[in-house]
Image 1: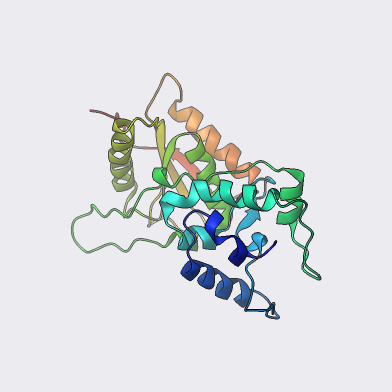
Image 2: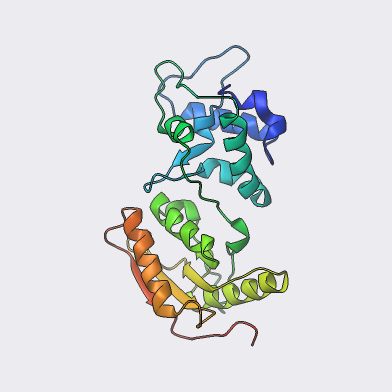
Length: 245
C-alpha cells in the first residue's frame, strides 16, 4: 500500500514517467537503495512532508515534477488514496513522520501555484539572471505558501528587481481577479536578494481587509512559525500601486 506505482490512476498529474523520476530521486537520497520486486518503490512518504508547524504538504520534488495545475488536487488525492487504505505502518527500518501525520489526520497546506509569479525581467541594460527558487530554504518556501493561502501573490527569486516583481504581481493579480479570484496583496523576494539574508517586499491591494502593516505582521508571524529567527527582512513596497488602475 506504500508504493506509488500501485496507485498511479488515483493521483492527479502523476504519470509513469514522473513516477520513475520520483523513484530515482528517492533512492538517491538513501544510503542504501530500497530494493523491491519489480524495481525501487516510491513510498507515500516520498510524496509528502511534514512542515515545521506539523502540517502536511507536497514534497518539493513532487512540485518540481508534477504540472502546477495539478498540485492542489494531488495533495488531496495522496491523502485520500493512502488514508482510505487504513493505518499506514512504516516499512521495516524506515521510520517516517509523514505516516504518523497521516494516521493522526494532520492539517494539510496547499501550494496554491496560481498565485506564484513566473519569471519577469523588466530592467533595461544587461540581462539579469533570475535566481532558482531552490536556492532558498524550505522554510522560506513554507512562509510564502502560508501567504498564498491568504490570497497573496508571491515571487521567490523570479524577478530582477523589487519593483519589477511588484509590477508583475499586480498584473497577475488583475488576471486572477478577472477570473473571479480574490487577491489581497503581493509578497516577493527578488533575485538580487541574498538567500542567506532575504528581503521580502510586500504590498496590500485591499486596504479595508488587509493593510500593508497587516501583511508585514503576517509575514513575520509565518516566519516565526517556521523557525526563521533571523536573516529575514520584511518591508512595505516603496512605490504603491493599486490593482485595477
